[in-house]
Image 1: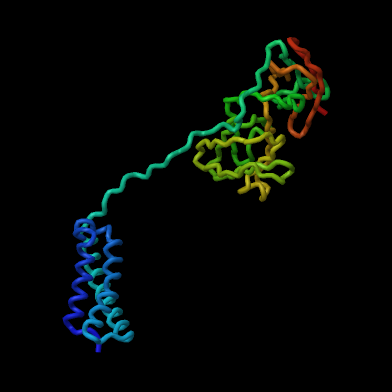
Image 2: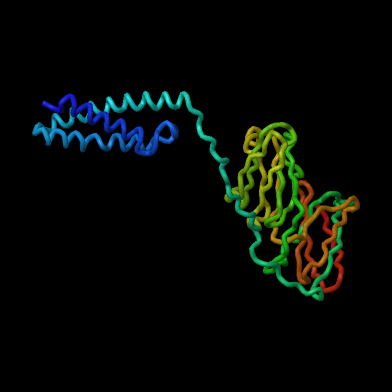
Length: 301
C-alpha cells in the first residue's frame, strides 16, 4: 500500500500552495515563476517519505510510485494555471539593453618623437613618364630612412569605393591608425580582405554593405604593401585587385597634374623614395640636409 487518499490530497495541496505563494502571489508576477516551480517540485519527495514513514508503509516502490504520481498531477495543475495567467496578462516592459562601448583607442600608443625644426627639411620632387611627361596621380611615399622615428597619426581618412569592378583607387597608402573608409556604390554586398606578406597574413576581412554606408577600419601595424580583394567577387574574375601601402609615417601622397609632390618637415638623413603608377614602380635615393629642400625626380619604367 502507498499513500492514503487524504495524504495524497494533502501533499498535492501543499505543493500547489507552494507554487502559488512561495514567491509572492503568482498572479502578480505570472512571467516570473521559475523559483515557484522548482520549490513546488522539491517539497514533494520529503513529504511523501514523511507520510509513508508516519503510517509505517514506507517502501522504495511505494515512495517512487507516489512521488511520480504527485509530480505528474502537480505539473498538470501548475501548467494549466500558468497558461491561463499568461493568456490574460501582459508581459512586463523590459528596459532597453545598455551596451557600454569602450572609447576607441589609437593604434599608435607611443607619443610622437620630438623633432627639432633645425633637423628637418622638405622634399619637392616630381614623377616622370619614360619620355619625360609628368606622371599624374602617381602614388609617392618615403619607403626607407625614417625607421625609429614616431610620427603623429594622420586624421584625414583614406576612402576606397567599390563600383562592381573592384576597390578604387587601385593603389593607395595609409598610415597606421589612420581611418580607412570603405563603401559600395553598385548596390551589392562586398567583402574586403586585406592580406600582407604575399597572402600569409590577413590584416582584416570585413563586409562592405550594399546600402552604400561607409565602414571604417584601421591598420594596427605597418604591413607595407597590402593586397585588397573582394572575397565575394574576386574568385569569379569579376573584380580587379587593389593595393594599399601601410606605413608608420605620414609622408605619402599623389602627384598633381604636373607630376609634382611635396613632403614638408621631413627628418633629415638618407631616404629612399618610391612611386607607383598602375603596376609600374620607380625608386630614388637622396640625402636630405637639414633646413633644405630636395628636388628628386622619380622616372617610371
